[in-house]
Length: 499
Image (cartoon, rainbow, N blue to C red):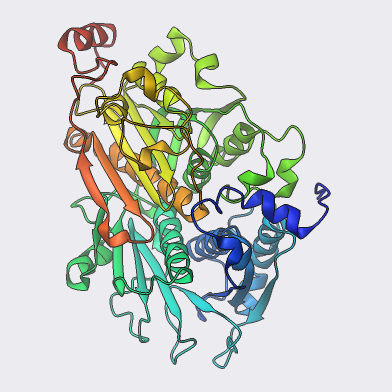
């Protein structure tokens, strides 16, 4: 692997962590050593536990220089077992994870330790336990995470009794990845002195529900869903969820991770398009999981990387190094007004989100971040409010919102000013995972889509217990006019099968 030449570790961290240092002074924190423990009974790679290890380790590695020191604890058998995530035959779990950590941060320390009852973790600041807890206290600062179906769960100081714990990461990849984000968010909060918060919390990606009461979320974990009928997440659950066409606008921290998570999911897409005009830079490494220094060489397209991530689930994938405005034509826009299509938007610019909305796609998923908060929403034409209704909720003129505004959906719509926004990997990835869960629910629940169209989910990873799901009402001041009956009649005549 050829890596670009960097003059020093200081220059690398200054570039990579430039956006994450805006909100909180990560560079001023003392060094933090985070141990990640694989269950002792994991002697060979299962896809779920390997996804949990890969994403947890990579997210923590990218959280800023203090978090770059990682200890990985697993049995020798698990470390040497063949990876189920790698597309290269014969690669072991240890090789895959080590390569990810090295390419994401060539200067940060990491080491592997063999799991044992008396494994020494005295030098660790905190421990993230993946799945089943071992007997005995391993470390006083332990965070345990797990997932089942579409439900992610986090427990702090769990006292060795995960009575509600499901089988280790028998879950949709998006739920597993979201659990990793919850752990990273907890580490981030504690690093800045926020030691309070619930000891147990569960989040259901299929419905957006959050719960801190084990007696309530216990059935969620048992069933793998907070809803009556969970969408399938693995082959044994039935036929794959399927879309005819998928369009991903922007392959950055939200769109790129969306593609990577969806690519490992029980899903099928006939044709997919990924649009992004940019190449990777070192400053992108803090949010783009799976992207290393080798992708910052000249000509490394964000769209190309995200398109490759979709290959396992898409029959045809087209990578376009272009903005939406330059790519779209009336004919292309019409294709995504048809039943069985979806458009996913994770672009920074509000004007592009509004442009996509003004083409009235059949299904639109919108996701963005602001600091430690993410927002995701789903919109169906003629049902509830659209992205224009969300971004145009105030008296601010419509034209004033048509400007670059990085990660704008995490703040109230309306009065926006262009300014730098802090970005953290666990927030961007959480938004991506939630969007995959939302898409799966929408594709699976044909009859009930109108009940949750227009839903906006907002969560701060520093206080996930305060997550909210609200419905965006149609705003008559929105100049996209998609709430006007006469315009809907025109659209429906051009697409009689659209709803």
